[in-house]
Amino acid sequence: MKKPAQMYQEKKMNPEDILTLIKDGDDIIIPLANGEPEVLLDTIEAHATRWKNVKIHQMHPRKARPYIHGAFPGHLRHVAYFLSGASRKAFLEGKCDLVPNNFHEVPRILRERTSHNLVMAVSSPMDEHGYFSLGTNADYTASFIGKAPFVLEVNRQMPRTFGNNQIHISQVEGFIEVDYPNFEVETHPPGDIDRNIASYVAELIPDGSTLQVGIGGVPNAIISFLNDKKHLGIHTELLTDGIVDLVESGVIDGLMKKTNPGKIVGTFAMGTKKLYDFIDQNPGVMMMPVDHVNDPRVIGQEEKMISINSTTEIDFYGQCASETIQGRYYSSSGGQADFARGAAFSPYGRGFICLHSTTRDGSISRIKPQLSPGSAVTTSKNDVHYVVTEYGAVNLKGKSIYERARLLISIAHPNFRDELTFKAKQLGLLI
Image (tube, rainbow, N blue to C red; front, side, top):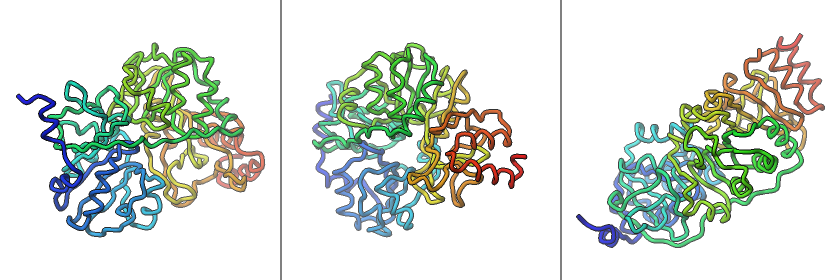
């Protein structure tokens, strides 16, 4: 039996060595965010024309690479499962593909619809027992540990985290060593509208709740309103800087959680060095694959599960279009529907959909009689629960369509309420 140190020396590679592991028609799986192996992808792009019909599958790429934008037709093609600023324009121009999905189902889609010939990911350095950690990530990638060949980009600056994102040297085809800082997303101060929305949400979060929060102005603001809460827990797809503040203030201890009590559970982390330092070697943080974290059946086991997400527009039925803007694709479903369903399964669970009442310039109401043509429904009318704007929070669960129209108009911007009331009457939704 070979020792980990011996296998380490045998499997250490130069970036160009990976080229021999890729064949025509292969499907390569890449993690999202900081899990994206920058040097390995640079190497593949530099030799793109040596292969035919290789597809690279990824959510939320960090870098707007030439191959994403169709620079190597017939050789490399990007298959997206969530658009980012690096891929949005490419999709709208037909240069890459987008596969509709709920986040928790991505591992299954990749298993069943691709040959998953190779997984390429960033990891922390190997420990004395021979294990690498996928660090800031578990996402869909960790679901393939032991089930697909892995090539690692071992980054000296990747934090070591715990959970089901550990991979042993014996499970690795090869690796390269790199040293570069993690990608950081700065926390922007929330505006007045965000704070108003956050205040309504915070009032409806009871002590002992387990939270799923996203990134952006409203989630950042909500975190600042939770300092007087007790025994909150975290079960969320995304770990952000705000969680650190709540842990350090004693608000988050996870003692009331039904699954993994005392643990902060997530599937990827994205923030600043403050967050990455917090999760490094932290036994209180568990990074788990997304088909566990985002599974509505798992989420629903928590009591008082609180799901907080945002949308770009909502109609009188309660349908939320959260991945398109004015009918044009912007992102994808992510985990919004996963957690809306999970909160519905949870005893005393509550799901929140947050939105500004108007577009930024105030010219268009985000509460509409009907969604914009071309809009994709992310959270269905059957799953929507609380809807919150800067004018209040309304509970749509169990309400009739007539009641929903009336309630949504009550939290629309005052400048649009008369017009919305008129349209509702035209549609036969108000008398």
